[in-house]
Image: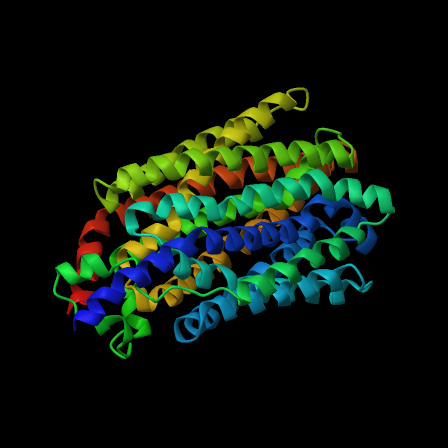
Length: 454
């Protein structure tokens, strides 16, 4: 018995010492995740012209990887609860890197569409597995900051894509070149992730669970009592799903159509449009995660519900500022960049709270499954729905405006109007979801600790 007590601190020390290295690798993988996602958005007008698409078809193409990836997220999240999470994350990274490369080789539209589906399925493995890993590397009161560092891959990867993809496409005189180049680092990082030594499940909870009388082997017992349907008896999870759906609706709509708006409505060429898109999505997102994680963790020391409340308030701000930005007239490009950038920053603050909020109400042995469910439903409704819905509204508004202006002007005005209508509404829906989660968060957090101690 005394031997066990001596080795536990050593085990915890090894986990802590490796936490920064593991988090760094996961961050780089996430950066590549969002770099690969953003490539089509930067060269979307070239893809549209090459395959002769309308905005609905563009939206469907942008949603392909989200739609199929969301469906795959549930079984892949379940798998990450059953086998080593590094296997799920590492092999997923290899898969989506391979399909990214194929996207630069295939010339048929439906074949290209298929590569985006493959990218989505590969990427669907990553967040549930890595979210569970991060929860076992850091305790609750440090998770928002750790999650923020992981999520920095989102703005930095997107920023790099918007800053480099246009230049690569112009330099090689082909929108396909960035797809081939982006796949190489993915293979390297995937191999490194497969070589890590991941922490024991529940490693960041033992002090809290031991205080409640949990046995040392609690993290090893079968999870038969953790029925899949039982996840939906957690009241706050419903609000978290709604928030994730609303946020992704807005974020994917902006990510898909911001460069086309800058080109069509504001008359910019590809490279300057991509650079400004990188400023709006990348730099503001970077600032939101750096400062948001610190604020949210400070709030979590008081209670998990306070962290969620701050996230819900930030989403309200995101709705207001994005509306002001997207309403900018053609001669007021600065208004779009400044106000949409602030709105995007406030939305990112919510994102830093999303993973820790799930970990606060779901036990260690079900976190990957729960994250897979949240991401699947949220992405199906929001991530896939956002680009398609905005594309449909854009085409409808363009058709209505075509009788009074040129075709190009109508198409430009249709997309700008669709973004101005749909994005703020989606942020409001996300805010409502987080307010709902706030109501149940404290109760669900205490219930989770009690279940783990039973």
